[in-house]
Length: 425
Ligand SMILES: Cc1cc2nc3c(=O)[nH]c(=O)nc-3n(C[C@H](O)[C@H](O)[C@H](O)COP(=O)(O)OP(=O)(O)OC[C@H]3O[C@@H](n4cnc5c(N)ncnc54)[C@H](O)[C@@H]3O)c2cc1C
Image (cartoon, rainbow, N blue to C red):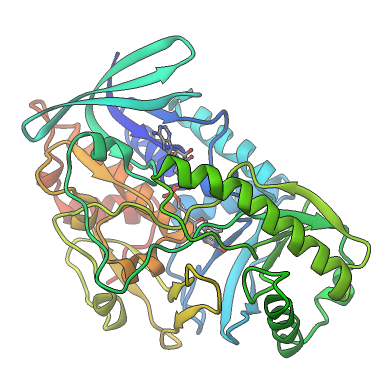
């Protein structure tokens, strides 16, 4: 099978990449190992899109990400854009949504754009010839299918395609540990009038009490209200693993459900508004914050985000702070930004070193551990995905073999702006 743009991984980054590529006129095949799209956003049940703007209210994310929210609203499955106070005391804007309905929205987007979906398909092999990825094999229900793409976008989160292609990856610095995984769970019914009336200090005290007693694995009661029910999705388990280790990942699924079960009992016993609630559902899989990060043409650093550095090839912006969850438990390491602070992500951080026809989108881009702690969120992942898909389609306009390194960054920025995306200065 041949295709212009092969996108591996149908999380929010990969789905936006495939839709953007198809809307720009490329043929696009979107490969996903599960039977639905969304990755962490649906299967991981993360349930809130964070940080669309600076604290002062300057918008930094739009484009396809905004379209996703508009489409969720049409299904009455997204809350209003609001600001909440985090357990750290910081203010953060967000849109809460129903993860099950996001599956439908992503289905609609790919279908309307003419993307060919290939679900229940896992990347199983890659043929690389020098700097060129020649073929990607997929293990599917119809057997092994070999795809020969002009450009590959690796949006598998764990960057499985590039791992199999022998690409270079960034190491953790001494003292850094991979961000932990979390088993999200749905709990309800909740009396939100009482739950939302808790002052931030009361929430923090309850969270610390639950953590001290061993009932909570994390000193937080972080949750999203599901607009489709009287339930909340809770983000209060913590699993310090390398999720590319199959055995560790399997143990984490089991331990994650145990932690969620215990946390639900604590909510019911101790938290006002939760007295009548029960655990209703686990996320389909444990949510993964960080695994492999590719070595790209540019490695984005925390210092560049904090300064912030202005990039001539900036293709997306963000305002989410550096937010590191300690793997061993305890409270967040959180570096807030100034009240109107935003940063850019350069195109070169999507371009793996040493490969001519591959790009990365989502949580595997070329960024240090600390920088990824900011740019990993779904709003930014969607913006980066849109840029990757657009760049791949532009590279495919070449009559000869496409080279993503030759994409004109100014033309890419102009195209993204024309699509309604925001790219910074
Ligand atoms: C617990 C948790 C809480 C979070 N909270 C927030 C939050 O409140 N707000 C926010 O905006 N962000 C949050 N994030 C971050 C955000 O959810 C992720 O960083 C983001 O969803 C990453 O998107 P992605 O598309 O890059 O990767 P993923 O969502 O990981 O998607 C990768 C996709 O690739 C597929 N795949 C993987 N390997 C293969 C393969 N070999 N073959 C085929 N398919 C494959 C997967 O099934 C998946 O669909 C949170 C993350 C976690 C884990």
